[in-house]
Image (cartoon, rainbow, N blue to C red; front, side, top):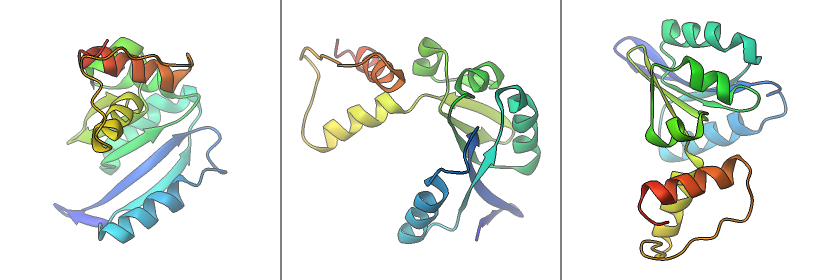
Amino acid sequence: MGRTINGRTTTLALIGDPVGHSLSPQMHNYACELLGLNYVYVAYAVREDGVPAAFDAMRALGIRGFNVTMPCKIAAFENVDKRSEAAAIIGACNTVINDGGVLTGHITDGEGYVNMLRDKGIEVAGKKVIVCGAGGAGTAIAVQCALDGHL
């Protein structure tokens, strides 16, 4: 498994600690199979202090992108080359895209939530939004709503 682009195998990954219990590899590999995408998704146990070395390895290995789980989200933010506007506001990254060695950090929870609402025909523009919860996902949803001009 793995898609070859310019002689390199395209790999996607999850980093964090612990990750051994994560179902992400099974879910993402199954989704790629269903969609006919020839990618492989793997999990790497990376401690927070190992993020800089892991990022260097991912650049060298040409890993196309990776998800970041606890406790590495702030360290990921501190070690990317570029950041999305939402990630810059929040100060953390849960997704990193590798474009030829340039790592761009994103925080995708809010964008994913707002896009899901739009897909369901719910437009939040011009409406007041209440977010119950102050955790990472709630914060990301509030920030994305603000960025989209919905708050």
